[in-house]
Image (tube, rainbow, N blue to C red):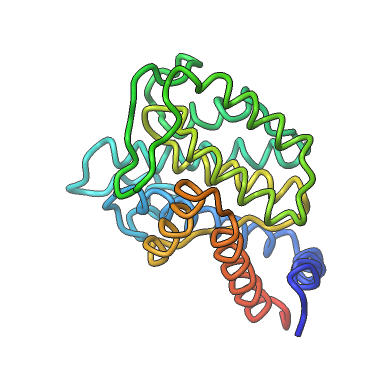
Length: 242
């Protein structure tokens, strides 16, 4: 049985052998699915078909609230920015986090500041960082990402996501932004992006909550590894023989 690292290498080998057209097809489809799942996890009611038509044809879904349409458009803009960062191996910084967040909350005007009042995570059993410590915790967070020794790219990406959610620096969009930062960390370490499907929402929140409540990152690392393996297997089954 191949290790995760071997599967990742196999992913790259097969992906690099695809034509540019097939590579673009895969990435476009992945990003649309990722946008749909990431926004749906946060309560967006647009269907996958709605998302496809909106992002490929510019057709606004009937009967949906305007804010739901903006969530999809904003997330798509954020992924494009994420990919440009990854192409240049841009390190995760407060400026990068805020820039991705700005796209996520499109078309709201971003003030480049963190929240100034307390918020609570729906369904979580732990408290987020209080407002008085957000600026300090964000600096610690970015420093940890650049200086701590992580056992694997998965552990680093899991920490990036879980710790940013625990800090919860913004009023809204923290989950979507944290998943983007998770994926920037993966791409910067030569791992493929990871999509947490909407059907995994309960298991995803449970694993995240273990870190928020007990500082135990292992359940989330295990969760991410399982998804990554399954995702790569799906990719290989579809593209390896083409």
